[in-house]
Length: 174
Image (cartoon, rainbow, N blue to C red):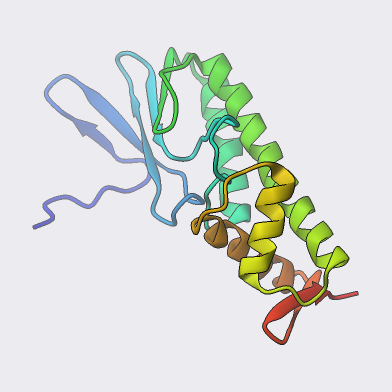
């Protein structure tokens, strides 16, 4: 059973080791991170993904991951973060994590640009075919989780009236 629900801003003391809780939605809606205040270690889970990963950067919401990446950079810039621990890389300095966060932000933009190019080049492609086109153009492995990332982009692009559904696929709205 759950004995404690953790939320943004909570400080939890583990007998001399204190952590502050941060919410970093985007990779998943409930993604969280922690700042261990004694050593100034920022623990951020899967919000950062190095470019060397063979698969597409995984996130459910492009807008949320962009905000979380900016927030990670702001937290690092505001404090003296000595070490950043991420789920997909070795421990890194705050400066190195800033660079990875910027690279991740650029990757989100690159994925969106590539997706729009694919839709423009071949209107009415379905999600699976779009995934295949995007990962091929970006030099990444074809795997199912990329569908989640692209679906998030498509939802936001439809809301912004940049793309529209056309049968089982998508086309440019304009």
